[in-house]
Length: 169
Image (cartoon, rainbow, N blue to C red; front, side, top):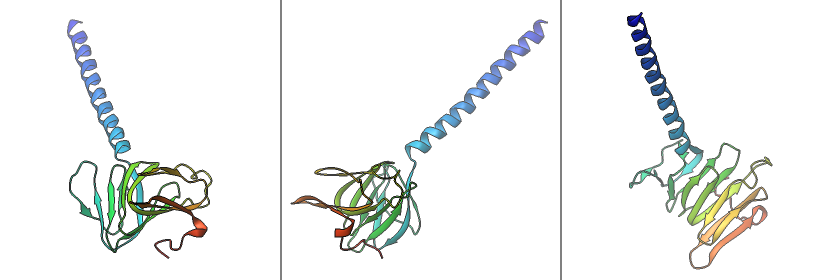
């Protein structure tokens, strides 16, 4: 009896350790994927575009079709432009000489340049994306607008009908 009891105790302890290890593994995987979750996918890009991961101090060139992650920064060069498709149907377009930080799944910060936002026809996606600029935070209530950061003159916001170019045809 004593031998069986000892075996049961050891088996229960081993099972507990195995269960804790599995829980720790899956819990860590869920935390890691939410912390570095996919922000959007690149729909189209042209020219020089650089991306810097949150944990890195060096820039890398953007590949052809690539997923963008929360925490990354994007810089478009003199000939760089890009279109980004978010999971909720919102489309972002970055103009030349634009610096953007992908702060959270529902916020980007523009420190230089211009972004064009098209929320599409989805009513649910309207107002969810916040665009931080040096002069304030913009949240769209319509379907299309542009936020342009102009260093000496602040930030200019224009709605869909007033935009001269949407960066890509």
